[in-house]
Image (cartoon, rainbow, N blue to C red):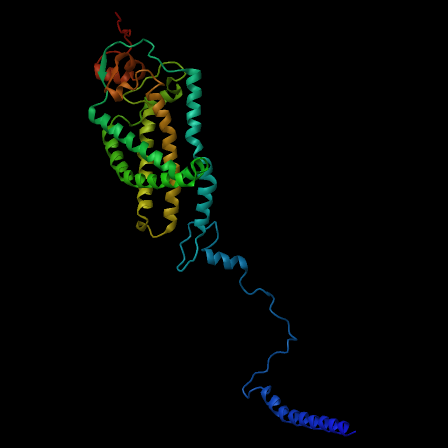
Length: 347
């Protein structure tokens, strides 16, 4: 009985204590939620919200501003403080999905066409045979300029193709380490011989520009397809094919030289898009020259009898000159190219 009375008394004391605490905390809580005197009454939310819940700027506009504009605005001025360039994305897509994927096939296609043509047509023989008499065609300095350019271009072509296509043509077969070594060495060689190419190009232009201007006789050469399928075609010192190759080397060579300098010294341009464009033009121009070079080599060696003599010896057989450059033969010798051709006497 005594314990029950003691327990009831403790509960009563605890109840009184809780009532006292509640009475003390009520004014404090009321004061803490009371708004300050300068408070502004906010809208109760009964009005409609903004029509565009995403804000005044759409996601498309935000990303266009972030990456520097719309993809179609390649020629638009670069904005100050721009974080990204849309042209960089397009450049990467062109390089990876088109240049590396398809451009390397161009030289192989040309080689295949030339091989097929050789099997069908065979080499162009001197119809009258060699006469045994020769006439000067190219001076020593002209031949040195030609072979100097040829050597520099071959080195640049091999190193450039290694840099461009090593990842897809070398790495899968020789491994990443071998590709890394070859690409690094190619980069050093390419950068070294690049400026030498500019000197070679100027020298080649000085030595061969005379006689490489187009004339009316070149139109006739075109219509007769250069005589590759039979028939005689007249020509001066250089025919239409040789002139076209010369001007292609000079003009595309200038593009390759300018873009190569920009790539070697990117600080020369302020707009990164010039650097991106340079890499594309450099690759396309170089592969185009390499591809047509195979045709030039074919005609100058196995494709036409007696043609290689002009760049090896500086002289050509008279019968060869009459058949392929009759107008030049008449100008140099003062003789008629229509005279019966003499054959080389054999004992």
